[in-house]
Amino acid sequence: MEKLRDQLPKGVTIAIPIDNSTFIENMIHDVSFDLVYGALLAILIIMFFLHDWRATLISAPPCRSRVIATSPLSRPWASPST
Figure 1 (tube, one colour):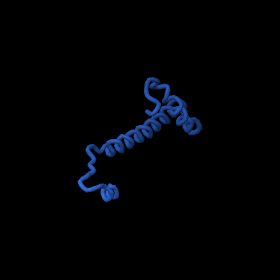
Figure 2 (spheres, one colour):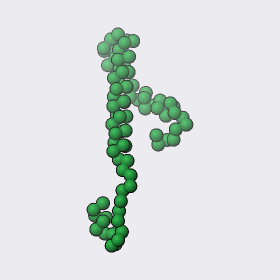
Figure 3 (cartoon, helix red, strand yellow):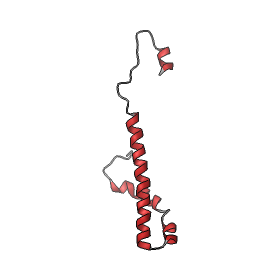
Figure 4 (cartoon, rainbow, N blue to C red):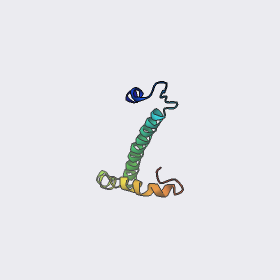
């Protein structure tokens, strides 16, 4: 912004009326936390049904690809960017 202010003609000012960057950063943090929390809960549920740590460790890593594959199907009416 400072570089642009030096290049502007006299009498022209730059103002930021709304700054949504903090809101977006907080939302990204919340989504990241929810993804990690959901992954841990999914691993615990797999462990609950399989009753074996070794089988859980083998079947848990593909959960990421399952979530990515099914997320577009969960909200078909949503826009592709969300």
